[in-house]
Image (cartoon, rainbow over the protein chains, first blue to last red):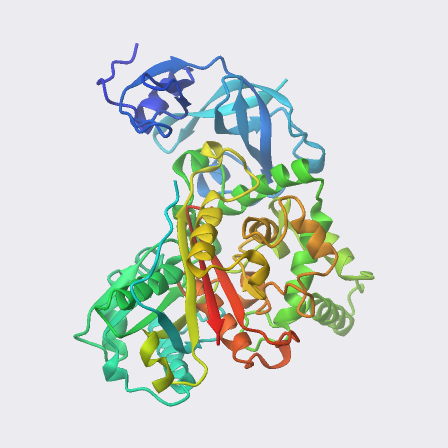
Length: 141
Length: 421
């Protein structure tokens, strides 16, 4: 169980939840809007009355790209021109969207990856330097 | 609710200059700004005494990171002899100098200053491509970067959403690249002043000279489909969909409207100016438009009393080919989802009814980030004053032009409308 200061709706808390294999959104107690990742101020009504809600992890792909020229972090994981990777935006069943790595799609044929593909959340544990980190991914079902 | 705005008094552009954009491994960006400044001085038809400049607003994004130097306002004002006049650096990623322009307009419109120098500078060539990509990624959103998105990746994802929603394909992106390169052929200040056809012919000639197999491309699209010539960066963004890494500088001289005729009989009046901000991809309602562009455009159109159909020529922020298709829709030139069809039909060509990016755009002219905003406005300056040479659009009674500048992945957008009277 992560202990959280009452107003700590931040990226570091989001990442700690990911390490626990949890995808958490922030729900505004005033207007009910859900935001992902966690943020302290509601983007719809500007209130600072958020509570944490867990997402069910299911959604669909609404945008994607297959990247051949990645940043140092991805090169470290072994991705390059011959082994590209897919990053995308997923719309969760709860109606909010989140960026994620996309797996289980054919990166060799990017024009055949379909918008609307159903996906389910997956947590990727990777080591970068000395640090173990958990990255948010979605697998095509 | 978006309020209607007004300026305290009118502002006009009376001079403009830029360095050639390109990669200058042995040149310091300060000296590129000196070139731009000197060209601006000689562009003021009746001459100007630089001692009358009240202030400098300068856009720059990455010099802190790439050349370990911040605090660029005073550095440039020292270089061009403006010290001790006030000197301010503006930052809005790739919209930095459009923000400098906007601050200059407000400063004069408020009545506080009468003459302001605005512009921008960027020096990107001194680092490796990987380091530059990392620097530019500072303009992207943290959550996107964490899952592997790169700058081109964000626009790649934007393109797949646009394709799916409107039925466009890579072929439609290629139309933008081909059109822009055809324009850049006539722009001596462009980093790549060659058409795609020129580039193909150069490659073929080189292969023949070296006794290598000659490529069999029959037309520009075959060249752009050849992944050896046009490799993937972030599908569907290929090399020729992406603007280059560039060094460069640009600047413009703004004065209070009532003084403009002291400097030139052909000033350009700032009739519309707008700015907006935008969110990361996942937080947007729709991936196929930029909220910041629409907000900025609405502000500028309302201020000017003009409509999209009144804009006769425009420079838009084609950091990636897909961006051009979206901007011409967001600015109201074409309906959402119709932008790619308009380009396909040739409507945005140099000789078309709505010429877009006659300079060659960011793709061909180059994109020294901080210098792009006022660089785009300089193209409008040249076109409206009939000084664009071989790329002068053949539109009769050309009076109203505009420039759209975008920072990061849509985090900042500006739209500026200039009028010749």
